[in-house]
Length: 236
Ligand code: DC
Image 1 (cartoon, rainbow, N blue to C red):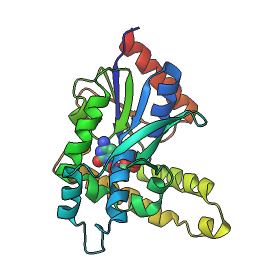
Image 2: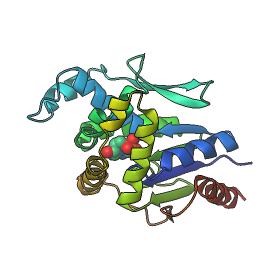
Image 3: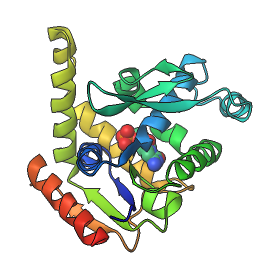
Image 4: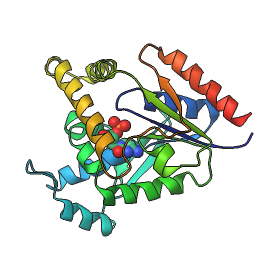
């Protein structure tokens, strides 16, 4: 069967990654989570004091990026069946999912020099096709010629609830669980929507040829079946 590029874009916490990973596993494609790449760069900036409360130290980050000091890569984890994210060779899969990173990632993802670096890497990853990539600008900026483009959305409340449940499931202590606030998570989801869709470079936008999926009222199984069907149609 011919190999294609599958671009999955949409809002934060709408379950894109879960769907995309599941599809890639089922059809034997490589899965790339581009949000993880922006998160890893954000973690780098935080670790190097480039993110004081006064704002991002853009010049310091640009210098490090231009000097090749920020390397993001993925390694397949046979145990989970999914790729793990590495920053300069160090496993950062858990760190990049924390709220401290989620709260800071959008302004980093809006920096044109960060987008240029990551977009180039993403294009290179798709050269051989047989790839499922999820993000915000995959169908518009990274692979405008992707054979299958999906734009996923759900209401902000549904997405905040999903993120709340996910973080609750990951909480290791009662204190961690008690510290979670639905209203804070909802605010974070809404803020990220705003920044992601209003930035100048490659804003979150539905590609004209993307198929829209509003999964507010769908189960995971229904979404997976829906996506597999779109893949079959695109490769028929
Ligand atoms: O999908 P996510 O929540 O892990 O993405 C993290 C952030 O990165 C989010 O604020 C949007 C940004 N992002 C982006 O600008 N472009 C992408 N292709 C992927 C993510």
